[in-house]
Length: 212
Image (cartoon, rainbow, N blue to C red; front, side):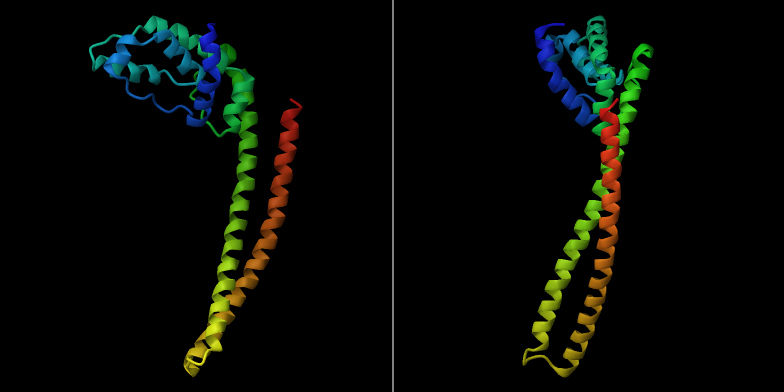
């Protein structure tokens, strides 16, 4: 493999993990005519792009009357896939929540999938923690809004401008808000317990995968 390809690999892999197996951008006529098809194939392979990636490139270039070099592209793609289809890369893709397009050859499929599934376990465990954390944050923000609302209504209650009927209504609203705040306290306590449980599961999975 050339030095340029080695240097390009981290960027290609990073994009592949973040973007999953998204389609390629359209190619201009100039890009089609000057393309290094082996390098393009390498980049697509190293990013885990499906065969459809070449079909998109071929169609884009056909619109400009340019025929891509499919043999060079395939050779480069195979080189890229050799780097992509490893247990370590599968783990990275799975842990990042990326998708897998079934691109690995039979001889490397099992190795990649082993890493991918292990990464997916971590991804799901982390997502479970994040879900309950988001619920906690929403509940805490609601309590803050309730506290502000109660303070505002209490201020209005003691003002000289408030009528008797308004005070009765304000007292009822404050009581309702306090009841909701009590419910939120219970919800937050339960969510904190659930957060601790899910974090323990996540840490256990991290330890398990680190010992692979």
